[in-house]
Image (cartoon, rainbow, N blue to C red):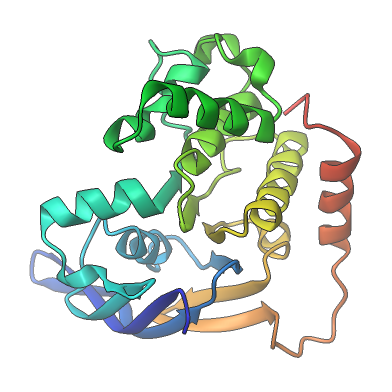
Length: 253
């Protein structure tokens, strides 16, 4: 049984007399531990689909089921509880609270869960080690580079041990070197944690590191590469990013 089942999902928005349909009868199954990338022109519904899977928004029709729970039928209170326990979100602009340290920013999702301070500390330290920022625990966002801020954002997304992590343009605000290192980090963490990762990106090279690549066009989702897709092409980008991730602890991101 797939971890995520998206069944004939349609989403529409109304702008004056105009009806915009970014998603039209989208159906997709995502297995536990898969890494999917999603591309498409601006306004084609990439972030809309991500937000539906993250239960931030609801479809006009269709169903989304995650690990046996049909999230499209949950109440607002139940959705908040479900997100806290099952979902991590990585933002393009990091979305760190400027008056909180890296440690305190990473702790935020755990405050929504019924765990004690000792367990919170243990999980935060593990997350900081995973992104190679244990020595930056007491630093504020203004004291870190953009790549380091994004690594704090990644640590915050994984600290609650979610089943699903969604990343909306995670390298959009980073320079090429930091982008490469962040992508390598995401791939490494996905493999180590066996987390299901969905990433929206405008960068074709970034998209290629995912297990499967999809493209949204006129409301329809089409697979363009990866597992079970006969593209007949090699993947030099993945080799480059994986090399960067394994040969360096990402100290300069």
